[in-house]
Length: 257
Length: 357
Ligand SMILES: Nc1ncnc2c1ncn2[C@@H]1O[C@H](COP(=O)(O)OP(=O)(O)O)[C@@H](O)[C@H]1O
Ligand SMILES: [Mg+2]
Image (cartoon, rainbow over the protein chains, first blue to last red):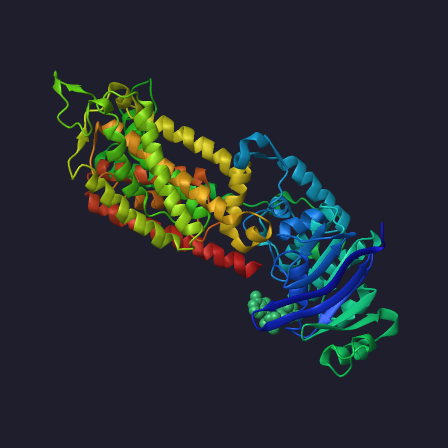
């Protein structure tokens, strides 16, 4: 087993004339937490969508867990072990916590009934509780619908999927962008818990303090290209901002942007 | 929220934080409406609406009126079950009443007897080869016609992305046209004895309640039900989660169509005749049952139990107005107000939930 959990080579996405992502070469090691930073519209979410099968890439290669992958859809990626917390929350308000965690891959019995196969609520509830305990997420009552939960609680539910499904890689796209201070702290605690458990993570974030608190390495995107790959110890906030704004470009990326 | 701000920790299961099921509110409304009619009945008619006031020891209820109430709503209630799951997907089905009309005409044509009062059936649609058929034939034809209508609705909504309102409005007009074209406006009558049994006596009620139980289980305990709620609640999330949304929607509309077809079979069997105007405005009554029962037109929320109670509310109001000897126009005014009230309440609840999040 190699130390690399995810690698992309020349990953590119064009939306018609918009070159949203251009030739992204990226490596993530097992157990490593990496931040992706960059201005709005730099291509961060686009990068995430190509890896997770939400969209089909224009060209390039994605190697996950040692194998080249071509996910047809987000479910494929999940089944392979990539859990994603999307920037726009993919939760159904009128369903409760276990229903949301297991949406699209329910535990079932009586499978001969096809679409009318029976849900195994008990098993899903137990797995949900185990996942919540593992991540330290607190929810007043998991049988309540998501509609009545705070933004932070919802985000935690989305993140708890990771722990519930024993994934190999977690991707979070601006998980705390819409949260208050306390809720942000709770999400950050969960991320630390994931780190202790050796989970690999890609964190898209604009929050410099958060990034320096949580990750090992920082990748900077600018206008669809990766323009810096910085180990946390070798950089600081000012330096990262210089890369984000384009005042600086990493030596190995000269001529790219 | 003190319990979320502590960061990491275990789980809390605070029973007081459990949600109050909406069906209880709807049930409360039913009780309230019954009480109002009982009071009005006591004042103006010196009689009770639902209870036995003739001091017989063997019964508490006025069974005859209960029976009328429930038979009255059973057939449209069957349609309302199908409509409920459509509305839960954030869709609508305006075609069910017309599908009843078309299915009534077509199914009945396969249910006719050859000899009526010693003479040839004067209403026979087809030649002798299609008379005296086993009862399964018209039943399957009825389900089949409903299924075709539902399939067309489903394809239009799920694959062509035509808004459900427009797609089913088109089917509403089309199916009514089919009903009128089928025998050029003539009624189709004289079904076989076996066919006449389907809708006789309390059978419509038994079928309605059996279907209500089945669909209650389906909506709450199966993958089909869960995905139906998920699509209505957040279609994008459902798609992201890997649910085949178009295929699921197609199935939802097919089932709604088949239930309308079944309602037509029961209705024609009960009335022993099929007419092209059958089922007129049934779609609106079915939608009213669902909406009064707490099914949200925004999708994602509602239940079969709610719709059944909604059907009973409509039944009680209809009977209550007759009981009070008030004209049907009052009844329609009150029903109209209740429907608007139910939707307003739902909108208000939705806003309150959004504000809290
Ligand atoms: N579906 C799409 N169609 C066309 N252009 C898109 C689409 N999605 C993103 N883009 C464009 O691609 C660029 C990168 O967007 P995005 O990845 O969302 O940026 P970020 O997440 O870094 O803020 C932007 O210029 C955006 O307008
Ligand atoms: Mg983004």
